[in-house]
Length: 230
Length: 75
Image (cartoon, rainbow over all chains, first blue to last red):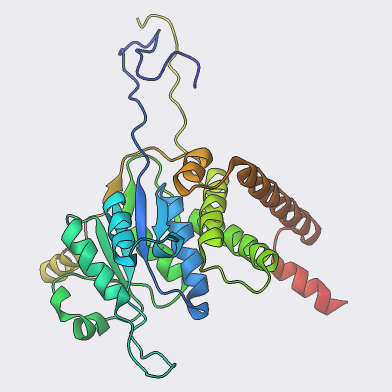
């Protein structure tokens, strides 16, 4: 705690007698993104960007358990405060029988039903493709990241802001670089496993937070000088 | 800018969602995700090592990777 008193207490010596508000609960963000090796860098970019804005990323890959998968997904969406959906994987799956993956549009539908506007965000790699692939969303402009890390971070910076000291894109990029280096180490530790698993995902989120603490300085506590004003 | 162009640009701009909650601490993130504090300390140590190594590389190369590549090729 900063010098000056308890949380929520009136700070002594403050000429305007401001009260410090207690910390509210942390906000989480549901990530609905493809889990494949080709998408790995963008997966890291989403974790880095969302963590840089002070949200805690959550994803369906961290949901082991015996409960029905749909119930677990619904539970996660209900717990989250925001949701981010990347619909850039629209091509057919290579493995026979070749089908498109419907999981992400389905989870987007669940989130749209649950969240109010400005709480869910749609991302795409190519402009105008969503108008064809999901025309029900006509009138909702997706954020076009172009399939690049910088694009994802730029889109997140366009979608979100913070009331105090919003992170800059170069700070988000610094978090991403740290995360990428750490991801290599984690990959070598798990020997043959992927980053799209429960343990690695959770550790990546913690690492992103550690990096954000260093790269994105949280707003400093205001200290008031004691003494009278003339 | 003509009025129509300006209006078109403004129409394309979307309002940002502003996050007002404070940044969570590393401990809060870890407890939310169920990562043990022992593992958090290990990860913090790993990051310290990574930053230290990066700092060393930067101090050797004078601050940029480009210079390091140039030096290598010139030798």
